[in-house]
Image (cartoon, rainbow, N blue to C red; front, top):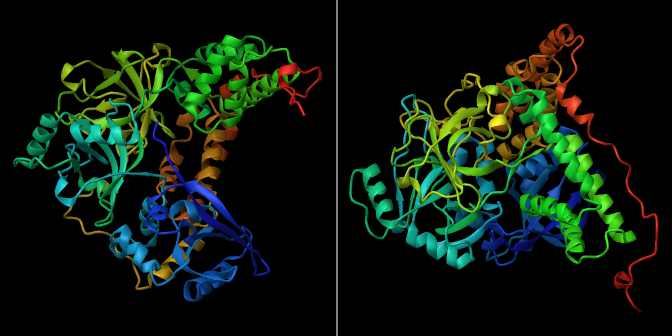
Length: 595
């Protein structure tokens, strides 16, 4: 597993009385920005109150943009914000001096000004986010060691290679050694300057052959990585490769309420999920009295999450082999059990043994046919064969679920712990699944025959993504002349504290459960939900969504008579348990701390 270091930044809150309070250091995973400067606490994340009117927010931001902000006798200049920051109502400020200024730092990130000039501040904020995302700095790749190769296109212009590049085996081995990663790691999610996406590992001779094939000329022996135009978000920036994540042997995946609705819509019967639910409930019920069952269940939970500290504590208690009836141990197990019941009721997160989440990559050689995939999971099943169901989370249309055929071909054996998609399909397979791509999306894959529908829905039709726009098309430019700072203020006010996507997703779930048509009933909402995911105009999306929802609410009244939600039917089978309390205090002497 990739070990990520942490840096401290400053945080504070602007209060409605005009004061700035709560200055504190906050530990965050290391990013390009925090590693670049000599002191990561130069960065101040300043939060605005949720209930401030737009006019007041505009006044405050204008002041900060032009005058900066003084906190604890130190002056901070306005730096900007990323997509994630604006959703939280936060802006970035920076403590300048002769060595480091806002302009100097941004120049080190790369040519972000070009992004603003071509696409406006919304895209600028997204690209700024590349320098604030959690990464681990790795080995340097000099300009003469990185090669651009063309994207591979489907006949309709969609990209088979959207976000997917290549890395030679010898250099990948150096990276694995430097970061103590498994020697057979084959997919790296990376950043390098303005480059973002996946690098897929190939034997050195195959890497050189593919680069030469795609470019039509021999490949210099110095080349270590090949990236595609779809991966280049802006030019310039640091040449050090940064690792965001990498492939590993995947654990079993889980369904959720949304996926269950989709599968019910596609014809999987409710009894299939009731059987899965009963098995899941039986295991949770054994947690308090069967150590082996509890350990297996907890290990699965911990493998699926890196941040479950409570689960880690319970796992340690079980490994210590204390008596399960000891009051403190019993209480902790009951607490964990209650949490599992609550999570299951809310999410219906049913574990599917014959499944996984894996990165999607492309078959560079063109070996696979349009409906074929290659899935090699050493340490689990080996090479998966037969029908598989593939989807991307979240998905809002039954047509986003694809039934494909997993095959074995020895020429693809170097691909491990990922799903390899064909480059021969008439339309990009990843794009047909909720506008997926290959720049780091993980795909749900199951080969459990009880979850693979006999008949599939027609893939949902979408416009081509921006990354598939041909070079001859002129880029969209900002519609009026304004400074970057003015555009930042406008963008912040339009998008700050936006809960639109959550509101839309919740409405989709309620409506999809309300009629016998299930997810087919909510198809008119799909394009609006996907626009919200892509960061469309919040005000217009909100208006359009409310209008579409009102129309569906009127239709629902007639269709919902006598209909009971199958998802609620499943939830009703999950026990509702109170928060456990310690009933006895006769502790095991081994657990008593001596004075």
